[in-house]
Length: 227
Image (cartoon, rainbow, N blue to C red; front, top):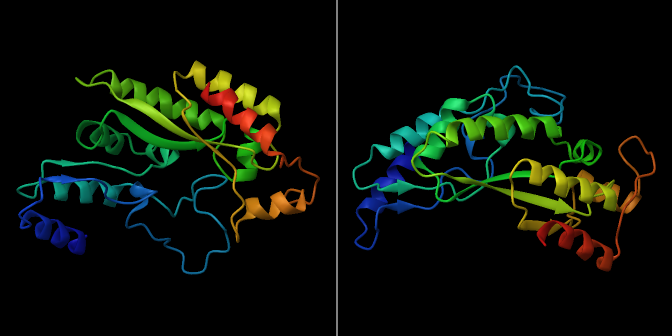
């Protein structure tokens, strides 16, 4: 935390700085400052399939934001990157302060998909988690003077996805009042499990998994969400 505070103090002395900070934390901001309390844990994830009891992110990030807001000359700190909405479910106080002090018109989240069969392959929380978060978000948002919209980041074409899944995703997002404008076609990335599934055509249990590679079909799936 001290190094971040020092950097902001340095910004306040810059003659062209206007008092605004575009981002603090990165892609999973509220996981700032959290390490596993177990030295040699065999699990590949602290959050999937459910959050480990030894891992409690959010508190230190809330402290960081509060300390940064106290610095003279700081007018506004935005969160330019996305946040883990499943983590914020356990941190309603943090979510409220993010909406009050650190949001513009939109709050970016990354559900990436809505169908559990695909989310499971992504190692993401089930759709019910997104529903619960949207409910919490709405309960806080309606008390604010300035309403904020959720901006979901979505992926089509992930291994395991069928066109019917995208159709269902569109319906579910609409039912939650969320606009689907930020949609990416899945891109294989070296070293990831998703890429291994993409090339192998199977899931982690070696069961055959549908993989769509035709760009025309992938563009159509993207169009289904963005049109």
